Image (tube, rainbow, N blue to C red; front, side, top):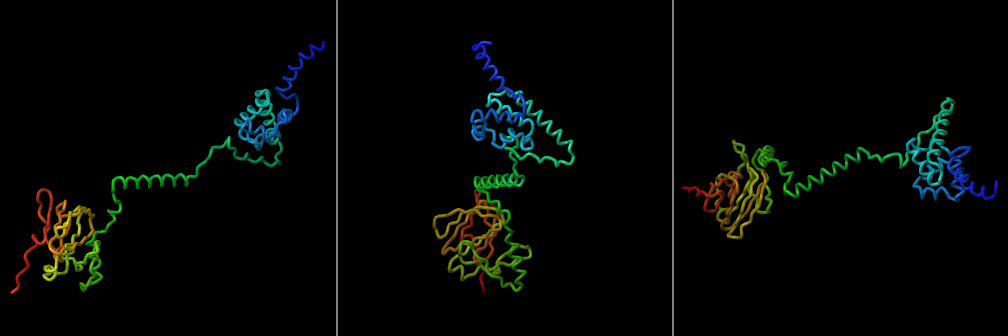
Length: 303
């Protein structure tokens, strides 16, 4: 054989020796190819995106530390291509050696079972705790409900307001002598005399007629709302203002000369002027207006 013929056959022999292992373990063969290139495990890991743990397990043939067969085949295929080896041959030999190792392990009953492989990022999906998922769903529901309430200006706690008359009935039961404390007004005006319920169950002030002394010094209007309603109030010829109330609320206003209140619904409130109940105003053009002192009953004449 001439020298030129030897040179032409050298590359083919070199390529053949680099495609499949002739003898020994497949992991040792892959390590030899890596060391010939003077590459470290970390450099191969950065280039192939295979973890250093899996690379060491492949070269050491630590089958227990590798993931399932499907993922192991994929890792071997990537590693073999990176080292310019024959991927199909490498995968077939490695998996055969793995099967033989497992078969030999089953023959020795006294040998402890191999530990389960540790979770791998490539093989195991990320699990979410059921409690965390339930908390996220609850948080989303609260945020959506809050946004709905703000968008519609709806107060969900308005339905939880207890009926005012039931509260007064409880207070009356606690004070059978009728000396109940006066109810406080939300607007800070002078409070009316504490109401006592009559036989119909509707609370009315204790006074039986208009307090003449109070009438001379001004007027006190008290409204106890029986339904949700809106009212427009004007006192002493000042600029009127409008406000919405819910069922069970109570409000009082004082005026020196006159006071006018307009309701948007019929029979929406119990009306008291100077601690005396008065009739709800009749409807007129879809509104219900009470003018004080024009609509007040005339005081009784004493002999």
